[in-house]
Image (cartoon, rainbow, N blue to C red; front, side):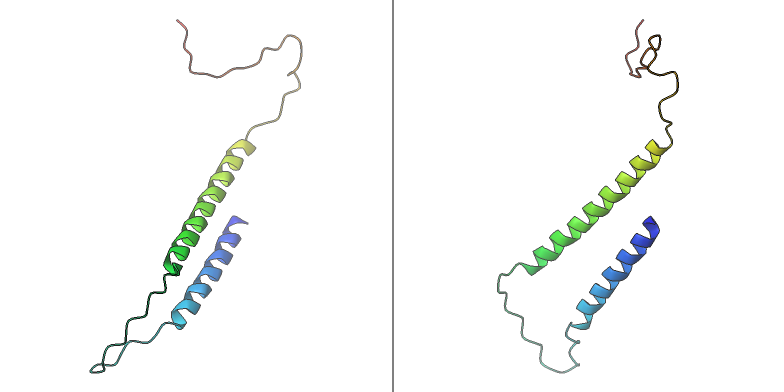
Length: 99
């Protein structure tokens, strides 16, 4: 299921990039005067795309780390039939080595 989501994300991203590249101006022909530089209106659009990209990367890292922690905890078994009895001691695993 995770791979199908990755494939869908890749297809959607590539189609968006393809649409953005299709709107780009073609290169100038040799010998023609250079195109005028676009006026910077200060809208901050490049920063918007950087923030969106970082949010997507952070979401992917969170998703895969969550899936990894879920996979490691899925291997643990539930409580045994003897847990909860009066004679059982809770098992504490720590690094405190007593001598």
